[in-house]
Image 1 (cartoon, one colour):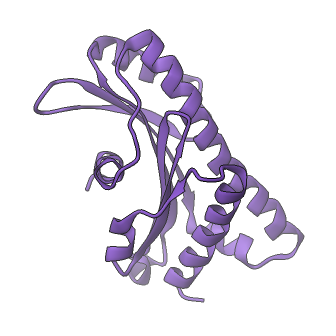
Image 2 (cartoon, rainbow, N blue to C red):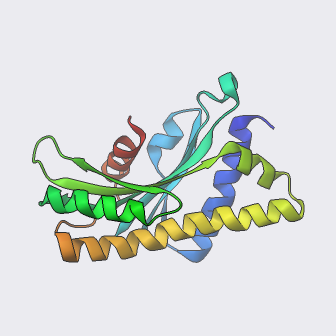
Length: 184
């Protein structure tokens, strides 16, 4: 299969699992439908807002692509020093994924994010099926579920200890998460 076909298949599996576990919390993200080499979806569970997407734009050049799982944990956090310390502490204790923060240009308030990235090599192996493929799917789905559940828990903890707030699902909110986590 071509990279985009594999990406669409993998995103389809992850989305179906998310819809099964988090009914009513999975969203279409229109910007992913607007670009032919993208596919993805959003999840708003508890107070965390997550996007899971694949970008196969450069896959024909180097056959490398992946699925990025990006979670906005909280926005409008006033104390950037505490935000930086929280991120550094969490990253020291995190084996998979990474935490980071951004600062709003207009208001100077902080926003916290969490990312996981799943390389296409793992996805392609999972799509081949068999016992190894099944085990890889369990791992990939577990990574997604961990990001969704942790995002909700982290958001509640962050807003209680650092201030700020969660973000409600909307097209603008999904775009904010994408721009903040993809460098776009």
